[in-house]
Length: 362
Ligand SMILES: Cc1cc2nc3c(=O)[nH]c(=O)nc-3n(C[C@H](O)[C@H](O)[C@H](O)COP(=O)(O)O)c2cc1C
Image 1 (tube, protein in one colour):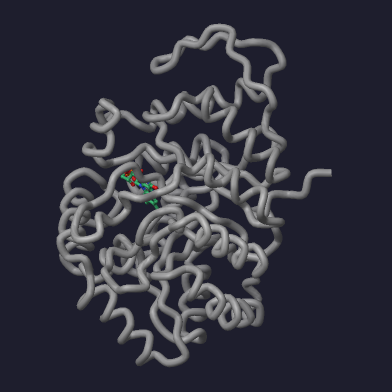
Image 2 (cartoon, helix red, strand yellow; image 1 turned 180 degrees about the horizontal axis):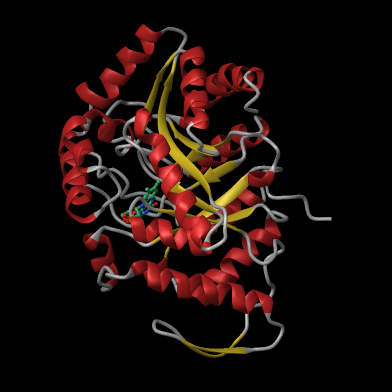
């Protein structure tokens, strides 16, 4: 019998690791221990997370970097093949693939995703992104699509259709025209592996509400973090569905607050890769609606620290209590990034996970 996907376990707050497949992780820094994202390090980080009982390992989809001293993110592993490798070397953790709808044909995605679902025995997950970076899409000669989420709806519909049919199917849509399409094997999970949509704005939320199990999104201020939950709840209810919401944070967890603050200042201010931070922020600001506009001015340190995500900086106790606050706002899960995943995950798992268990969250 197939075990339920880890995202469907009974824990109130799910935890995972984000962006270990890419240079820097989410950070944009020049500290010597910065994340190089080599395969051995990816494997070690995934196995630490797997043994600690985290629910998921989630990659970023990135095709080019942001320049600067280290050409941060230029090095990144492709996410289907990365997940396949990790699937064979882990036991229980959910393995996501992050896929740009306009760059990957749905029949290719269906087959690759099913392959990982078989290798992992039902632990595959699909994180759907529509993308935002015109330079990245330019590499493929593909324009950024205006109505990306309309295309995404058709894309996921095709994956579900081919998994669900033993007979070849024709599909005559707006974006895809398929004749006698088959994709075998189907995924082990039915009707398809768990899906997330990584998005911030209204159209992305509507797509998640219609077609995905989870929305993966950011917030800037913890006091307003519940607004996204209410909003997606309304959008999902309007189509008779429920959608869980996950978010993402960058973490510096240390024995004392002073140590954590000092390290955050060192890697994300003093030794930030400033030219790359400028490039990343300028591109995101112009082309991506993934953050509140005020975030760019107010939170430069957060962009160097973790690509504009919310910071969790402090002692295990402080981080556990902030995670409890995020959970109390209605988030079902948090994806985490660290400057150096293999060096920092063990302390985080040893010290924060028991506190979350005591709080009834895990
Ligand atoms: C939590 C989160 C994770 C994302 N991950 C990626 C990614 O891995 N690759 C990518 O190109 N875009 C990523 N995006 C950007 C989205 O694809 C999208 O372009 C962006 O959020 C702006 O559009 P929206 O308003 O529809 O969200 C991410 C966005 C969010 C909120």
